[in-house]
Image 1 (tube, each protein chain N blue to C red):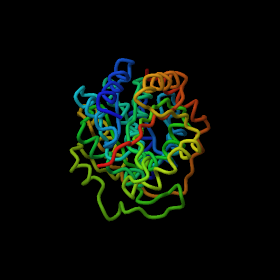
Image 2 (cartoon, each protein chain N blue to C red; image 1 turned 180 degrees about the horizontal axis):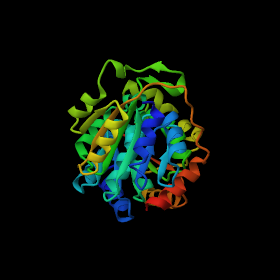
Image 3 (tube, rainbow over the protein chains, first blue to last red; image 1 turned 90 degrees about the horizontal axis):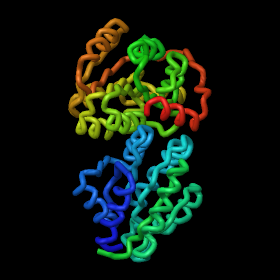
Image 4 (cartoon, rainbow over the protein chains, first blue to last red; image 1 turned 30 degrees about the vertical axis):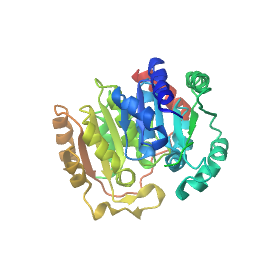
Length: 162
Length: 183
């Protein structure tokens, strides 16, 4: 996804009352994160689980929050997602960079990239993929879901190699 | 002093404050000592009480937040000390009930007897107190009312066979009543 749209996605959420963006950096999402840093809305944690804990606290304090992370870090956090976010019904949006979407991405992303869609399905975490043409519709969908106290995931594919 | 006594003592200074309690026996002890709507009892996601407490503290700057943590719990999320120490929430009081074992899972040892958690917290710019008796704990609690956080009170407790009852409120209910009470 190109730089311009990533920056637009950040601005869209900011305009729609998302107050905090907490996570761990990911190169797939770097323009989104950079836009957030420019707007002084980003909190970078040490690990994804820690980020989710902080984000959960902010949501409990009535301050809508988005988590951003790579799919590897999302996989690290499965127990936190099931035993905190889903169990306690905390309405959180996960924005996930999908490494390993391309077959020839780096080897460490291959396996987790392959199982990424199944992982979300098995967690019963409703999710949508954001593309250049669908992002606005799907971001809006995510905002509707959190208003109903549900947690959801939005995924951005890594469509380039470096 | 056993953990249950330490928790009861701290509770008498936190009657009107937000408390986030770590999973295992710590949440159970809090539930039997001071049940109230502004308690967030964790039953899973071990290690994250400090992070949840931080998130609340950053957004509720006028309220005091107590985190009831254990040695096993904080050792699982030591990075949170770095984050809390860096962000310096002045309304956050972090209590470590340190029995140097994983009591909830059968008393297996942690490394808290080898490495002093107080020293780590000092390195991350907390104001730190280390206490062993009920009397010192009370003095520190009184003193900390006039201090800026983040404060850590590292409480050395003895292991015990006492068991508090399970938290009998559903997690969903814990969330809704907690949110209505603090917002």
